Length: 455
Picture 1 (spheres, one colour):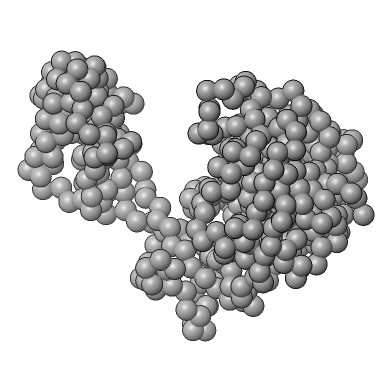
Picture 2 (spheres, rainbow, N blue to C red):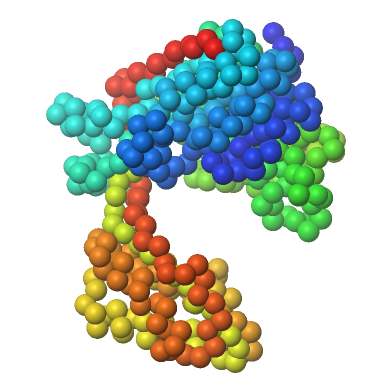
């Protein structure tokens, strides 16, 4: 058994810093690289891509990344875990295998494929069998939105990842694998932790939570003394140095920017926090109130004392469905009376939309530079505000009505208040709205499958 295992976070979301995972692999020693690409809305985006192209549906950035770092990973024996497979895990795995072959790595890379999360095609069967799938927040039954559903994915935990590692996989891809599981699995595999060792499983889960958002725990988006955080242009992404007893260090590579301290780790721990005593994942109910933090040198924070409780009998399901259309546009008004002009333009536009008889579920406005961030808490604006951006959006079930709105913004330039200095982005783009339907499903109905491909 190893005395220390290093798991590096390389992506906090699909679209994160492209150089981060490369730096993690090349700037110092690591054992594992975890890459979290998925958010709730991402699955529906990928599903739409696949509906247009059967070969799409996964994070293509992952393939170009592997082309860059795969030789390094093979040489240094670094294993990669990711949920980049989205809704086309098989297609993603095949693309990795083709990449490995193209790079002359035939026979040197085993690819783990973890599936079972995608239950879109099983929803109707579940309904026939009387499986109740309801919105966790509203109690609404799935039947109310079934005809609009675009994707349905179970949040799978670490089990499939552990199995793939035990079968010798060096690169693992899956669909809606939890971000915490991508870090927990290597620790379970290396240290031989049992699935009912709740305290250690909780510690590994919390380690995953700390690095799941990339540099957010190593200086990025940090509120505390942010002006003094060094060299964010070269920010180092976080690394977990874990021990068999469940204690771990949060750190980053030497010579990189950013900062790892107790405050930066605390801020990330609070991210997406509900009940601190019951942070529910597929693997464990982690107790965040048991966490102890202490400084352990420069850019090093020790995390210890963590406890956890048995996992639940349910998986969470992320269901996305079509919920109408939206469009958002902006106009910028200049001094003098910038705020008054923006308010007047808002009222003029509302009256014109009403006169046209357009139907919307919601009309929203923001006055950027006045109160867009803090709302009424911003107080009364200064009279000498140099410029104000009117951001105006509509949402509705009729795509035609939303499209008609997009043609009403530009006329305000010559038919409304003076001193319009920018029609940002041109005519607003009509976009489909994807709504989120969180639900629970008994674990006994879900089967995780693991396959190993040899390049």
